[in-house]
Image (cartoon, rainbow, N blue to C red; front, side, top):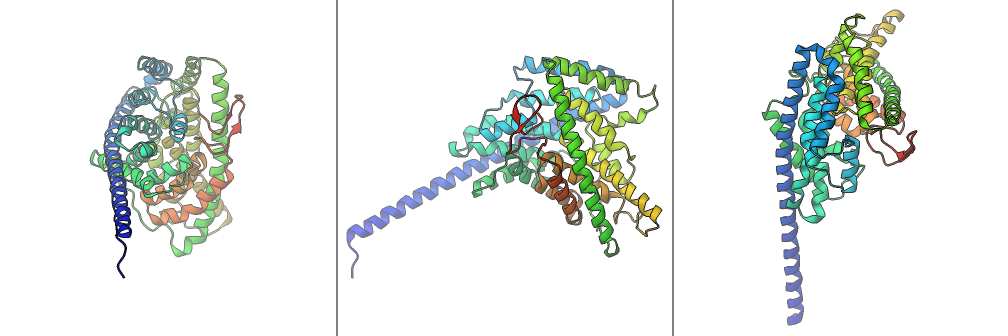
Length: 451
């Protein structure tokens, strides 16, 4: 039986519409992938520039320790630079994350302001990192590229910029991708929402690798972390580090929140910069007088402290020193990131817990292999603290686990799971970045964020 001519025409019409729709979808996806690749290239190059500026400032501070007295001057200079570039000085990583969630515009000028502001903070001896600063830089740089994507897909470029920035500077592109979903508190609902941050992160990571960017000096051996006889001690250590990280995160985030609220009552940002800078300068300036010259080593990004903790050379009080300097710097409103100092505090905290566990085991006569390299002590406690404290402060446990796997190997990630889970679940709701739950704080506003 022959099909009516009208039916065949309708089928051809439907097929044509399907082909046209598929072609348009492919075109939109192609435009999005192209924009994401270009964004990754731009963020990778900017990350190299940020790294060079920060490394240069750190080298100059190491050569001229007296620059610690100039910490308030560095803050005032950063404030003046923001005013000169007509960028609101209140822009922080938390505000950028909130803007990205709500689809607000982030000024391109912020990318250049945060690079210079972070370098000035490091030059004065402040304890800040460059990873969270790169998040601000990346989201700001994504603005001009939004018009390259289809209107419905432009909102995807801001989280893609976060993935690119974190992946490039942490040498962990997969962690950057996962972080972009966790910090945005949004589950991907389509292939475009996965492809965009993946392309941007991988391109930025490749550019950073070619430029010589590394999280840690040298290469860390991804050896087997747990031998059969040490499984239970390692699990117990993971539980101890996870609980310690949760407690420390509550103290750290609560102190940062309280200090920021207290300094905010002084009025203009210049007053907070003066108080925070003066406190830091006095501590660093009188380091030699009071015999704690080692405090200067805890200025800067914290990469050196992570390397020392992994090597087993960090003193037990290292996490306290790094946390104190970081609190003074961030609460004072100085520009820079908080991710690397948080990782450094966590690594030093883990090393301290591992040292304490070995001491207790020795006192009890337990045969714990505390000198067996990565088995129970050595690098493993630092890795556990590194991952767990980040999960507790950033509220991004999946990104913490993926980061551990990328940087230290799958064995490290497997052992880190209990520590990450406990730290995340026991650390409370307050964190470094906005959460889905608004909290009433002492500053009189409803927020779930420290900045």
